[in-house]
Image 1 (cartoon, rainbow, N blue to C red):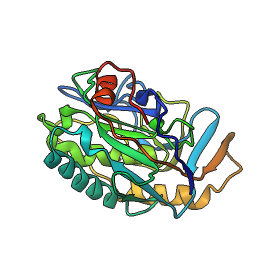
Image 2 (cartoon, one colour; image 1 turned 90 degrees about the vertical axis):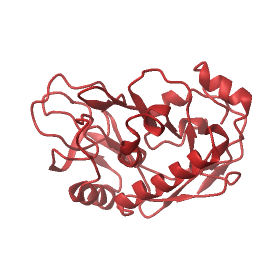
Image 3 (tube, helix red, strand yellow; image 1 turned 30 degrees about the horizontal axis):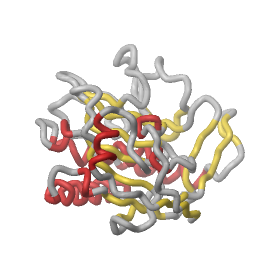
Length: 259
């Protein structure tokens, strides 16, 4: 893996390519893409945008650091560490593997507790595969809504959904809505990447999600797929500096935190 030691870059973490997982009174959705016009049609695993399909190299391990200093207590950080490992296990290394490393080690991405809540129904956000020089664009952020609120029970599912984005998966929308990404695999109304979820349900990674992700990584090795260039990326690692009071303040006012 390539490594970058630049730890002084500032960036807007909410421009990382994948947006926020949001919940509502009757529905939940992630703002990576706009909500669908209706609930007609069946969702499916989807990949890419209008021009490009990006994924990581097959068989690699994405390392991550948990920025414990951003969490209210060490206990909260450890709780998220445990749930993130559980979420990663749901995917069974079908696309890539995930491994937590020590706080000061080089890593492919970081996990933070983000105190800036732009919407009271927002749970989390992540990113799509990228090798941007600004390492802060590879951030998985968790909001207090899912860590302390009534949606705490959805934390594992939320993290599994965000790990899907990190591996290159887009939201599942009804057939008549999304014309940017393309279908891959079989349709499945219970997919973890479906962006609408009723509060009483307990979403989780489905066997079809795992099978489709595995075939996506095994079969698309480059070239084109449905008029989109397939880019296979090598992860870039960086050392993410400590987020002290200044970094937290930047998050609170929406400026983004130092990488």
